[in-house]
Length: 441
Image (cartoon, rainbow, N blue to C red; front, side, top):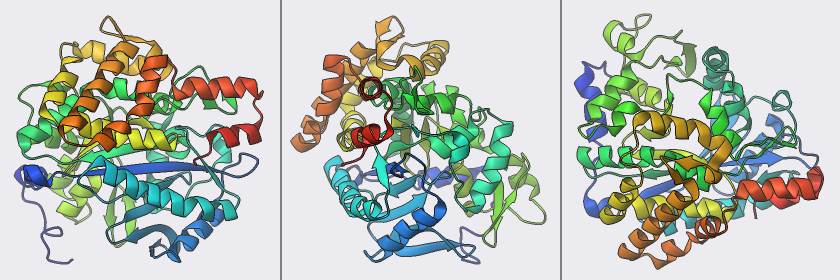
């Protein structure tokens, strides 16, 4: 790519802002994608090591996936029109699907991946679990995957938060990526999605078990994010301003310390240098490029992340039906203007300190908590209703039907986290029984 736009030195902040402008899509061209992380265990609940995970990736290459190697080690797969399969730090396997016009198509794409990988994993003694935090063993039992960026992150992040390694090695999530039409549209989607963060975490809570015990949390995954790195995680106060622009996100990102500078396939620690300093002064004779900016943006972890699309990041990975519900919820809320207004009205008048309080309380309280004087369950019920009506107006009854598990949760007041904790008690913590209860089907 030498000499390409991506590799030429950047001239200033305006180029960084223009990067987000390139994400603008026509109204009839908006798509949605799904990213789904899966947590594997062996028969006794242990985390599989890299050698076992590598065999799984090798088996997938026989199904048409192309190898991606780093330092001679297989670390990912890619396939045209099918997205990618990558490894998270503790061996979690993530499928990043291609963007599709509807949530139904995005879900079908992810379902095909699950149907392909489950039997291959089973042949290697791996079962993938539908939960948001590794339920068995301790953090020291989980091996690190051999990726250069994780080597730098595992050294840097514990200096910023006590739960950083927990986040890296033991959490799993399901995310949706949504397009925008314009800067105004992108900023409204960012604001609404960030305002709804705690509601979505509550609905999708599915990680009550830690070290083989009931933790007392609805989402221990979300709890880990509370103490990972406040520089790059959590809520963004500027996102709630009515006049927020792309430049606001860029200016925030400029001041977040970089993990690394990547050159020649190597990740070199940036030692806390913010991107703003890299842009201004360079680093060891290297100048910042658009590739560097895109890499830096991928290392920021707010509840809603901006790239050339909007990435919503608040949900625990869990059962297949819940994974299906996540993109349906977001398409119904964010791609229908009336539903977007209705959803925003649920949280619009919260003071920022209340947003923070609820965000911090949600990992433990979840659906059973309160927010700005209202029961969280009631707020979530209205959110799911807004999503259903939005999908119906978008002409997607099949998408609306995928909201059924969320409607069941708000109707009964019982989350998947509640069911997992109850099953743990019923089987007295028996690992094979819990694996059978939690496994993806």
